[in-house]
Length: 497
Image 1 (spheres, rainbow, N blue to C red):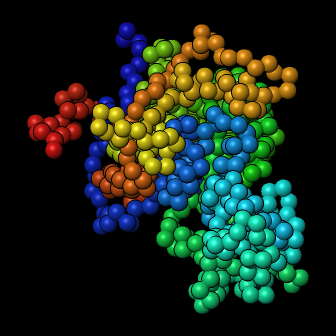
Image 2 (image 1 turned 90 degrees about the horizontal axis):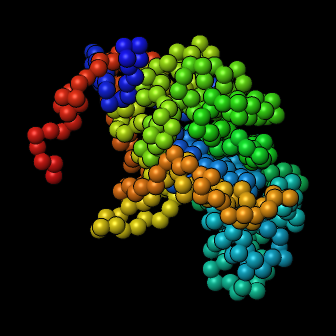
Image 3 (image 1 turned 45 degrees about the vertical axis):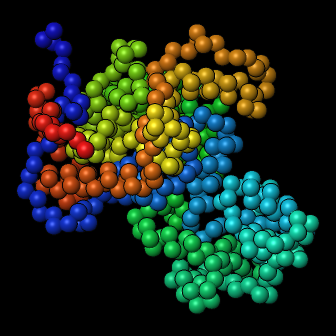
C-alpha cells in the first residue's frame, strides 16, 4: 500500500495568501486561452451537456467573456442552426442579413420569422435570395420591419407594405464603426443597409449591435465581431461530416466529446479532423494522465480537457473503478501540456468559485462548468416546481436517459436515419450508465452566476498576491488540510438564515 501515490482534489487543499498590491478588483485581468488560437476574457466554459448549453447559453457565455460548447445530442442540421444563431446574435456587420422577395405575402413573412426563432426582426427586400434567405449581392428594393407587419392583412404583399429604398438611409460597405454610429444616431435609425454603387446589398449594420458592444466590452468575439462558439462532436460514424458542417457554419472550435480520450478512437478522430480541417482549433479529451495529453497533442489537439469522473452527475469512477482526483490529474497533465504549448481545460470538480482559483493555480487556463450553470434561465429545459421549490433537470451525458436519446437519434427516430440503417429501439441492456439524472435549484439569469464566480476568482487572485489570471496560473502554492480544516473553511457553529 505504501507504493500507492496519494491523489488530491480541490477540497483537500488551500492556497497560501500573499501580499496583495491590488487596490480594486477591476484592475485584475482574466484574459486567458481556451485553445492555442482562441482567447477569452474570462476562463468560464459552458459544458457540452444537453441540460446546460444550447444557443441561448452560448450567446450569454460569449457576451460575458467566456464561451459555450454546444452539445451534440441533436441532428447535424439542428446543431449547425444553433451555431448560426450564435453567430447572428451580434456582429460588427451582419454579413448575410435575412432577405425576402417583394412578392411574398405578410403570412409568409410571419411564418419565416417563427421558423427563425425570433432571431430576425426585419427582412431586407431584394429581387433574389439564396436557400438561406440571404440576398447579398442582389439589388436592394426596401425593408420590411415588425412595425410594418402589425396591422397588415395576411394577404398583403411585401412590396405594398415595405419601406422602399428611396426612403432608406444606406451606407458604403467601407464605412467605419464610428461613422456608422454617428449616422445611426443623427438619423435616429435602428438598421442601416450597406450597398455598393449599383445598390447591391453588401451587409447590414444595426444600432443594437453597437449598443451591445459598448455595454459589454469584454465579450468574446471573433475577427468579424461575432460571438465565439464551440461545438461538440463524437468519434463514431458520421463525426467528420458533422465536423465539416459545423466548421462551414462558422464554428470557432470543435470539442471531441468522449469520456476516455486516451483511446484509439479519440486519437484517430483528433488526427482525422485536424488533417481534414486544419484551420479550426480542436479540443480533445477527456484525459487524466500526462500520457493522454501527449498522445492527443501528437494527434493535433489545440487544447486538452482534463477530468475523468469528477463531475457532480458523473459516476464513472463508481462504475469503472477508474479515474484520478481532479487536482492531481491537473498537476500531472499541466506539466506535459506546458512542454507542448497547449492550454488545459479543467472539466469537472468545480463546486465553488474558490475551486476555479485552485484549478488556475494548478495550471489550467479555463474551467468547464456543468451543474454550476444548469438551472439558469438560459440552460435548456423547463423550470418545474418540486416540494414548493423551482428546479430544473440536469443529467450526465453518459447517463441512461441521454444514452437512450442518443441511440434513438442515431437510429433515425428523429427523422435523420442514415441510408441503409434499420430503425430499432435501443436495448437497455446494451447501455451501461456512467451518469445520473438530478435536479438543481432554478438560479435565474446566467449572467448573475458568472458575475459571482468572476468576483470570487478575482478576490482569490488578489489573496494570492497576483494581478492577473495569467500570473496566477501554475503557481501551485498549495497547503493540504485535514477534515477539521475543511470544516473550519466553511461556515460553522452557526445556523444559516
